[in-house]
Structures are given as C-alpha cells and as structure tokens.
Image 1 (cartoon, rainbow, N blue to C red):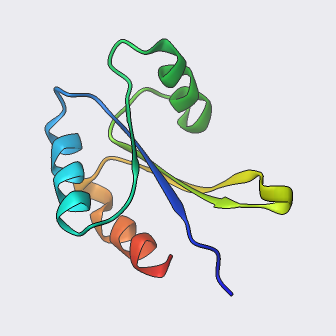
Image 2 (image 1 turned 90 degrees about the vertical axis):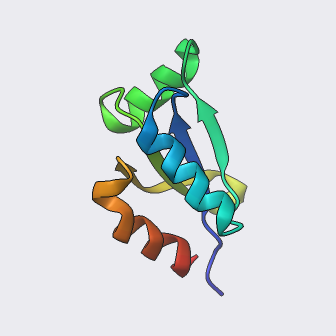
Length: 93
C-alpha cells in the first residue's frame, strides 16, 4: 500500500507564483500546509535547511517513515517552471 504524501508550501504574500500555486491547490481540493515565511525567521531557516536558499514558492513533499517520523521525499522551488512535476507528484500520492 502506497503512503500518502504530505505537502508543505512555503510562500510569501507578495509572490505571484505563490498565489497561483495556492489557487491551483485549493481549486483542486489538494490538502497542503501553507507556511508563510514573511517575517518568520524560523520558517526561513527551515526552508534554507531544505533547499539552501530562500526562494519561494517551495514545495516540500513528505511521507511518514519508520515509527511515524516524517521524511522529506523531494522538493521543488518555483511553481510555473515545475508545474508538471508538482502535478505528477500530487497525482501519484
């Protein structure tokens, strides 16, 4: 049985690519956790730890590993340039 992926989306309110991504996810009833990094140093640190930079939107896909611990499966930076891969990940979960 395949594990369902969890999506965390790191965004900023001034980012049009972020708004497009949230609109797509909401209009397709796709569950995700929005992480607004504007003014939140802790989320910025998390994002930098995952990707090495502070570029949004950043999509982080997780699955539950052994003993229920979450494991990062993959991440994408940017929506338009990665839209096809992101949609494939969402369809396969």
